[in-house]
Image (tube, rainbow, N blue to C red; front, side, top):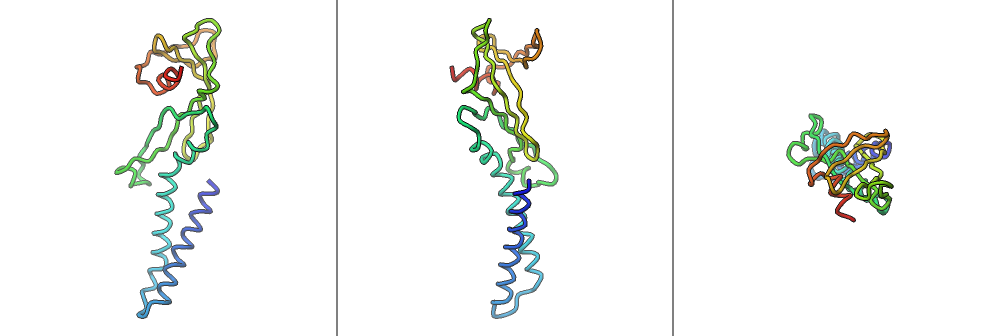
Length: 163
């Protein structure tokens, strides 16, 4: 978040400076209100660019063996452009390279699951998937609560297709 604030500040300064230079160098004086307008325009452009680039930057920074299984886009009133072109605000990644086979049931796999959300710290948990019966659960108790899921479930398909 700190780097976003720095980049937004620099973008605003650059936009204002560009308009100030145009104002001073134009043969007929341009209106001075273009300076804050240029800053605001540069801030909005930098914010939109940062929003749309977040998921790609986050996915590119994942270590080898960790793949993005699901993406979610959430429009918000403070981001009106997201109603037209959705902005990815949540990534779910699975450590496929570190997948472990269950000791008792060979069709069940355990893997680390990472949830990345814009403006939040990443969360890590484990997930169990049963590739044969098409279900998944969160381990942690002696009897995990299995949940039947569709074969197109992103977690199930990501872990089971790479076998």
